[in-house]
Each structure stands twice: as C-alpha cells, then as structure tokens.
Length: 218
Ligand code: AKG
View 1 (cartoon, helix red, strand yellow):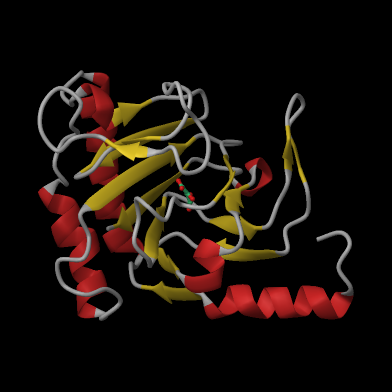
View 2 (cartoon, rainbow, N blue to C red; view 1 turned 120 degrees about the vertical axis):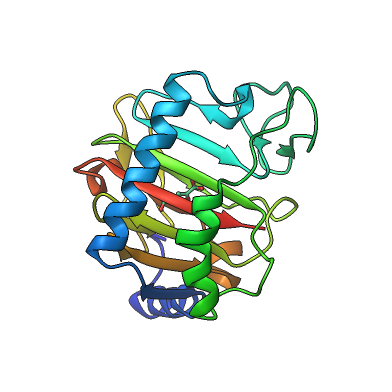
C-alpha cells in the first residue's frame, strides 16, 4: 500500500467500505448483562468446566470456542492459510455448544434487526483481550467460514484495521489502509472485499483497556 497513489488508495478504501456494515444494537444495560455472562465464561474456564478445545489461552488474549472449534496455528504440523481445519463435532476434540445466553442475548437482537438470516450462526467465539492484546492481520479462512462475519464488542471500544503489516520483536504495526471504530455494544459485519480481499487485525495500541468480542459466524 505504500506504493499506491492517493487515488488508488481511495479506490481501495471505497471497496473495503462496501463490505462493512455497522449498527449500535446494545445499550449500556444490555452490555452490562452480556459482560456479566462473559465473566461467567471466564470463571467456568478457570474452573476447568469446559472441554479442552473450547478454551485457548495466550498471554494477552484468551479465546473461547463454542458450536464449532478450529485449529489454525501452533498445534498443527501443516500450518498457514488454507491448512486450518474444523474440529470434529463429537468426541475428544469437539468444543462446547453455543451457550443459551449467546442465542438469547446476542443473536436474537441481530435477527430482530434482520442483520442475519435465521439459523445462520453455528459458531460463536469470544476473544477476551487484556490491554495491549492484539490479533495479527489475517483473512478468516473461506473454506471454514461463510460471510458475513459478525462481531459485537464489549467492555470497551477498539478499532478494526485493514491492510496492516506486522513486524515482531518488538511488535510494530504499519498504518492501516482503513481503520473503523468498534464501539462497546456495536455490531460490525464484514463481507465481500472487506472480508475476502484484504486482511484485518486489531492493533495493540487500539486495545488500551480490557475488551471482549463475540464473533458470530457460520
Ligand atoms: C478474529 O478473532 O478473527 C478477529 O478478527 C477479532 C476481531 C475483533 O476483535 O473485533
């Protein structure tokens, strides 16, 4: 992107924007109720109440997989884009089902707002970020996830950045082609160019406070 002219960058930004939809659906009191439920998930995980693959802990970011689990990185012999695979639906490797409160408190309002078709969502992932937590640039694997990809933010606001390059040790992130705000209680849907043709990430500097996101996908 550093080699693009201003006009070329604008065309790129316009294409990304066509694939982003945002709505503020959850007010402060709805957020508080959902945040209490997220705390319950954290507690249950700490108590060892979930299946092994439901919980994925990392220093600044824990993940909780419900409905469908998948593996994409360090535990695999063959890694990299295209090599991600879903865990089986039954048995040792499977994850816990989507909790009822996610259906009632998070998915139902999306259905009422006609943002997703009925019965679309069969995967719910909670990412719980500590301050400075991040997700490196990636495209959600097409062979695993349909579009749109839906996220709802809790505890604090952040930003979703498109087209960043990451460097490590020390961590450095290039300026995004486009960055969109992710307000607490806000819903973000990505599809088309925004989901398929450009990477997205959460930069460490955009998570100054603890934040959780519920990612709803099929
Ligand atoms: C992912 O976990 O794949 C994300 O892109 C997370 C996005 C977010 O935290 O809003």
